Image (cartoon, rainbow, N blue to C red; front, top):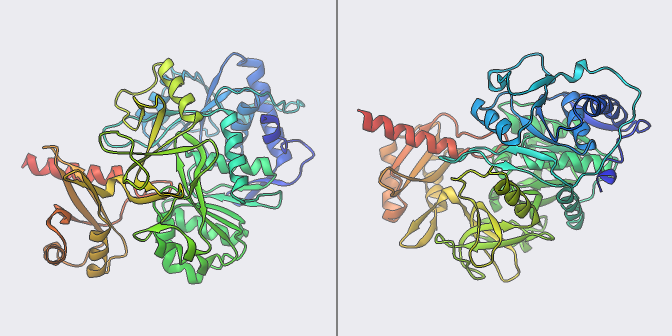
Length: 507
């Protein structure tokens, strides 16, 4: 129940609930601010079902979300540094007409003065009311995910039932959090995993540490782990790869649990984690935007017994009430051991899909989510190519952007990346596929701060690779783009390729 999740928020709890920009706030302080905001909601906006919240990294933003949840309402998160179009679409889709904004400045991305009323939590009068928790198993989150090329943002929502199931699933992985815990998430608060880690911290009476939105997010996060003796951290495979050279210098002895998720984890990077987190239980997990929390998990401390494939670690075993399916490019269900795109399904996917369809909110060109003709259920594409083995473990083969279809057979680009890395000694590179103007798939290789002539690299690859694995173009790039959640920004790489192609044809 909601009351159980939020039970630690009351005025006599002086344990730390939040750490924002190195300033601590207790559960009591969070409750007092949230109760003032809740009184404003109940007094002036009792019939509103959804409120907009502009995310600022401050106590009033978190208190606004708590107040909305406690009032049995839903919130949609708006990004002041995001796309104006995305924010406007979200306002239109959710129908929110009241916006909580803790900043005095309204950025261009939120400049829709006729679309909503703006409330600054700092200006809400102080009351002596206590926070009242009302349970409403409707929806608690409404927001859009990062855009994929030629695809609009998606509206995603969850019920409290989904949040409760996600917390119970974590307990069954043997990951334990109590009131002494210190929880840190690499993910931006628009990401489900950050919201999930925030909720599980509140449920456990632990302290949640927020991360400022900075370009060097991975370095900032790991320095916070050391500075604050963090016990639980959610991170990404790419962050692990970025920081691997510094692992000998990062003594994260306080870390009890390290949860890696968001993309494919290479065995060689996982083996280095023990250097910086000798006391931590490390879990590789899978997650999906349409499902709250994590969807599969496996502990990887004993790497000799970890199931892996071609140097990639298993994403784990499906958690309760979550099913994985492998589908071919023609959307046919594949058997155990057959390689295809991995799809995930549970009641959260059904609820969110049906709600979107009933309210005409699902974009026509959203191609990851669909109803399968044979089994009559909605499934969501994970963007991971892989298979399910005989033990029901999820085995990744490649990211969907890093595989190419050769005569009906999916081939991953790991060999190309391996040979290119060995020859160039590049610290960062990534190979992806791109469907060109003629609907043919091309391979493009991006190398960060390249010091060797691209033609020399190509000739070396040509001697050692089959023709179908040779890159159509090698890009010398200043920085491999990563998004605010420390994941490789594949859509940005696709935009670079498309932009270069358009410039070429314009000549």
